[in-house]
Every structure is written in C-alpha cells, then in structure tokens.
Image (tube, rainbow over all chains, first blue to last red; front, side, top):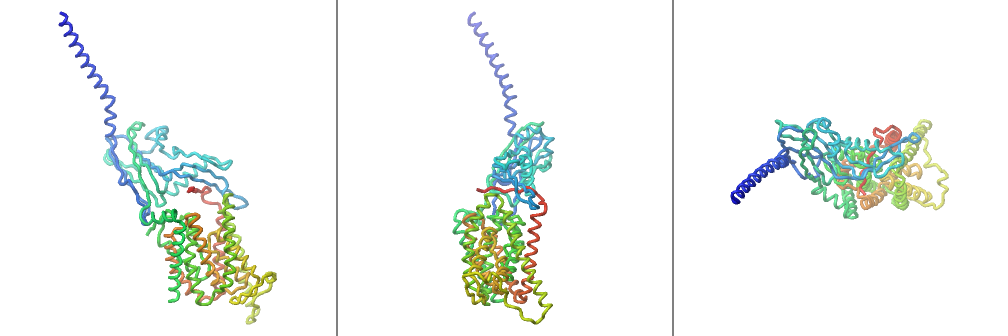
Length: 263
Length: 305
C-alpha cells in the first residue's frame, strides 16, 4: 500500500519535472533565441583595416560590405582620432579683419562620416541616434576654454562647417546601398588631408527604431616608407634633419649655378 | 600627379609645385630676391599650413640664392665687405625677431602683425621705387644727354663711423648697412622670408648701390640668413618639409636658368620697373585680403602641442 502510494507519487513527480523542463525550455528558447540569432542579423566586413600613407597617397577609399537577414536599415559611422582644435572668429577693427573671439575644443574627431540606407530621421528617433553618436549634433563637442563672450553654439557650428568644407565631416542618406534586399555596401572615402591615427568603424542594424545589432572595427591610418621616415627624422633628430635640408638645398643651388655657367 | 608631403600632411599636384619652384628661381635670379614673399602665399593658397609653407620656403631660398650668388660672383657683382656688415646686422636682427615673435604670439595676433608689416614695408618700397622711376623718366624728357649726379647727399651721409666700400664706390656710415641688416633680420625671423625684396630696393635707394651690385650682394647675404632660419625652423618647429623643398628646388633650377638669360637682356631701369610692378601687385593683394570681408569668418587650428 505504502509502496504503491510511493510509486504513484514518484510517477507524479516525474511528470511534474518533465513538464517544468519543457516549460523552462520553451521560455528559455523564447528568451535566448533572439540573442542567438542576433549574430546572424548582421554580418559585415571592411575591404581593409589599415591605410598606408605613402608618397603617392592622394586619399583612400574603404569598402564596407555585409548582409542582413532582410529588412531594417543600416547606419555606418566612422570616427577619426580626437584632436584639440582652436576655432577663431575674425572681426572688423578700423577696416581690418582680425582674429578676435576664440574657443578651444579638446576632443574633436579628426574625421567623422555617417552613411545610412535611408534618411536618418526616418530610421530612428533622435534620442536613439544620439546614443550611438550619429548626426552632427550628437558629436560630443564641448568647449574647454574660450574668450569671454564667445557663443558656444555658433563656434560649434563653425567648427563642423569648416570640417565639412575640408571633406573631413560628412553625413547623408542613401550612401549605404542595398543589393537584393539583403546585401549592402558603402564606400568610405578619406581625403589626402586625413589625420593619422586609430579610427573606428561601426555598423548598426536598426529595426523599428531600435538598434538590433552592431559591429565595430578599428581602422589604422599610418605613414609608411619614405614619408614615415621623413616625418620621424624631422621630429626625432630635428637638428640633423635641418642640416640635411640645408645640404640638399646647397647642392641644388650649386647644380643650378653649373647650369648657369653652361648657359 | 599627386605627391604626399609628409610634414605638411597632404598631397599636392607635383607639377603645380614645380611651377611654383620655377617662379621662385626665375624671380630670384632676375631680381636678387628670394621670391619667398611671392611663393609663400601661393603655397598657403594650395592648402599647405602657413608654418610649413614659411619654413620650407626659406629652405628653398638657400638653394636659389646660392646659385644666383655664384652667377653674380662670376660677373663680379658682389660687394663682400658690404655683405659682411649687413650680415652682422641681420644676425642680430633675426635673434631679436625670434624673441619679438614669441611676445606677439602670446597676444594671438602674430598673423595680422606679419601681414600689416608686409603692407607697410612693401608699400613704402613700392612708393619709393615708382617715384624714382617717374622722376627718372621726367629728367630724361627735360634734359636729354645731361649727365646725372652719382647720388644726392642727404642727412644719411652725415652719420658717424664712415666706412669705405670700394666695390660699391661708396663712402658711407657703417651704421646704415648695420641698421638695414637689423631691420631685415627682424623681418626674416618674423615673416619667414629671405628679406631680399626689402634689401635690394633699400640698397639701391638708401645706400646708393648700383642695381646689379645690390642684387648680387643680397643673394650672397641671403644664403646665410636662409641657412640659419632653416636650421632654427627645423629644430624649433619641425616645420621644414624636405620633400616639398626638393620639388620646389627642382623647379627652381629651371626657373633660374630662364631668369638669368632674361636678366642679361634687360636694362637696370626695366628690371627695377618690373620689380616695382610685382611688389605693387603683391601689395594690392595683401591690402585686399585684410580689408575685404573674408569668405569664412571662422578659422580652425589643430593644436599639435
């Protein structure tokens, strides 16, 4: 009787355990699955991770390509190393234009590029975009020092405007192109005036206004070969470098004088 | 064809740079001025940072002035004694200039001060030269054939420490070339040019040297001034771009040949008129830049140190 009851209880317990396991399994799958699958939503890569500045360097282009599992929008952000920048404003004194007000920004990205598959405002809310520093007004630029009376807003706008004119800052829709709804690509171009250093390239997949998936790479822009050699010598052995510069000029001048005698 | 300049950190069309170098060579062999005052603004216009443009330009002037000086030395156009006295003044002036540069920089107005100095000095020289040329033309019309006085005596000739400069056929106070050198040295340090554009007309109009001697002596003196400045710029600011200098020098070699050939064909008066016109052109451009409303009121400066 006792054993019979125990058996019944045991079998009841087993059934309960089995049910629990199944339920937990279903719940876990439901919760974890998106995370497991998330890695498959977005796969992308860069055509190169390093840009060499040689003597023939006249700017460079990097191709970013990848695939999504369909749907959603892609946003690409490229940021350069941070530099301190002083912005000066000219004013007229007695008919002459002279620098007057100034403002210093400590962490200005040397380069900033945003590309997206659709106009940014249709992809996500301003708050979402500024969280991933997308859009000029999301770049964290805070003045560290300024002349009295300098207006932070206009200096900030002037800084971004000047960077845009130099081809170092740009943001615009339509630069990420979809091929067949799943494959995407964009070309990031760097002008010849690009700063050396460590850049970051980020790609975001945004769905229904939410960031679904992201990937990030470092990109290094460095001087190599003769241009690196010249730069290093100029900064490390500057006295020797100066003498070499003088000797080269003297030799060229002497060569010119020989030419003059023959003339 | 683009070439990347490692110190300026940008790439520029190599043929454009060669043409600029040729212009310097041409101007320097024709007029005995370094040509820095013409090419530095052009380099800046191409996008090369002003500090690099100024320092590298001075480096090229070393070569340009050496080949010019050798050519003039062969023709006996250098007054070494005058050059030496001037050089003493120039070296003292450039030392003071480096110090003054630092003081003005603290006030953040060094760029404007440099341009205003250019405007004042170039304007003065141009006015002197043009009035001289006009007077010469008038004299010629009034009394053709009459021999002109070698030079006129002014209060400048009453100064003490008289010294004889045989080559220049001058007996003047040593203070004159010393002060002239001092002022030139100041300008070289502060404006980053060889100073020839100021020296040549001053030697002609203030000291009374002949045009050819003024040109030859200036070139001789400029070699040393430019060497000193190049070295200081390389050590202090690391702004000398050897690659840019080499391209400019290569262009300069061609320009020097053309300039020297033309120089032998032109007469002294014509040479002076050409130089005056060029100075006036640069002067107008500088005044226009300072007065006209700039396209962009704001400018950026990436702070490196």
